[in-house]
Image (cartoon, rainbow, N blue to C red; front, side, top):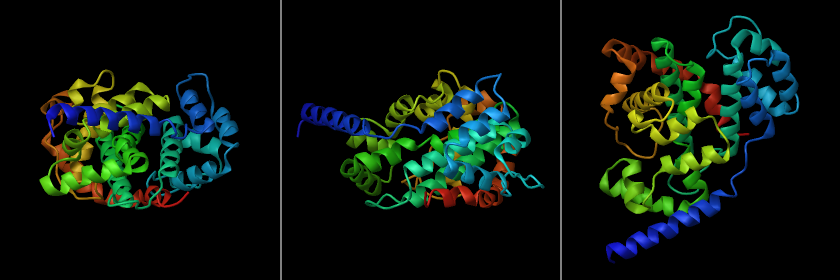
Length: 294
C-alpha cells in the first residue's frame, strides 16, 4: 500500500476516534464547580462542603482518602469543611478529580491493555510528581499529583473508544519494542497526547493540565505550565524506572534535557525521590482501590 493511501486511512481513523470521543461523559457538575471554586479567592470551606453534599459517593471517597496515611494527618477528619481547613482547597480538588477519573475509566480488560497496571503507573507518576514538587517548592504539589494522574489519559480513552485501533498499536509496541507514542504515530498518525488534549478541552480542564497532557514528553514546549509539565515528565520516567505498573510499553523515555534546566534539578533530589517513591506509593493504595471499583 502506497504512502498516500496510508495517510488517507490514518485521517479516517482520526475522524472515527474523534466521533466516538464525542460520546465521552462530561465531568460531573459537582467536580466542575469544585474546579471553579478553587480558583476563586472569595470561596470558603463552607462553599466546597455545600457543593459536595450533592454527591454523597464522592464525599465518602474524599473523606476516606484524606484520612489515609498518604496525607499524614494525625487526627480524624470528620467532614468536608474540616478537610478543607486542614488540608486546603487544592487537596480536595485533587482527590475529587482523581476519584472522578477512576470512576469514568474503571479497571477491566477489553483486550491486551491492562488498566489495573495502567492506573498503578499513573498513580506512581502522580506520587513521584507530588514528591518532586514538594522537594523543589516551585509549584503546587497537589497540581503535580493530578498532572500525574492525567498525563496518559489519552491511552485509556483510546482503549475505551477505539479498542481495535489500539490493539494494532499494542501489537506494534510488542513487535518493535518501542515507546507507545512512537507506535501510535506509526499506526494511527496521532498520539495519546493529542487525544488527551481533546479530552481536556471537552472537560474544560485548566490550561496547566492541558499542557501536562499534551507536552509531558517534550516539557520545554509547554505553553503555560512549563515547570509542572517538566515535573510530570520526570515523574513518569522515575515511575517507569522502578517498574511500578505499566504505561503499556516496557520502555523508559529519554529525559528531555530542557526539564532539568527548567527545574534546576540536582542529582541528589532525583535519587531521594527514587528511594522514597515505593513507600509513598504504598501509602497511596486507596487511590489504586478507587480505580478498581466505583
